[in-house]
Length: 211
Image 1 (cartoon, rainbow, N blue to C red):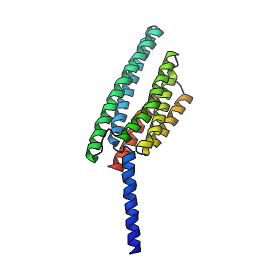
Image 2: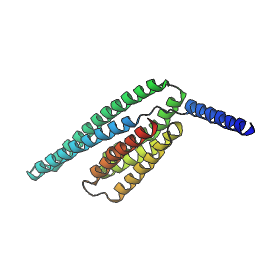
Image 3: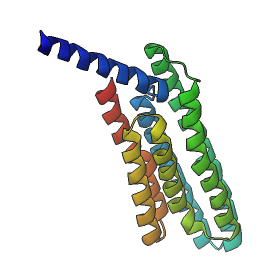
Image 4: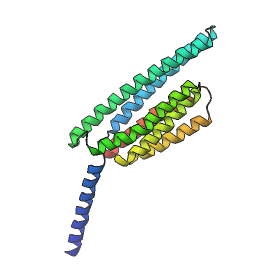
């Protein structure tokens, strides 16, 4: 009887802990959001690589370097912005669907804390990248985006699933490696691995772990 009571108490404590975690963490992030973001990033990387090749051929055909670099820079910014919008839209769709299935509010204290802790490093990183572009340090933009994105995930992981922290650490390591090996073309390679491949792996893992 004592053992049964003890088991009941442990079960009740486990349920209470689960309820407290639900109230303090936003747990409706969908693994399919990661997969969608990763596939979108792969498509964006392919388009960016194709445009770089096209501009390189134009440079070989005696197009002025300043015209080449400015046109390419604006094209890459446009591509990155479009990919970001699509990735966020895909992520929002799957997250809203999962939150509805779980009966969890999409806009509560935990989701607000999640967004705040996510946006602070992201906005800081975005402003830092603009400064890098202003000073002509194009090669550092890709490493900076990976590092600040990783920091944002680590910061936000306190208010959502802990698994996101590991993805954040991987992004930070990739960014540092990209800064170390900053050869031409490496930026897109590391960017593709970080925002594309890692997101897909993470999304599949999360989907089967929490489905």
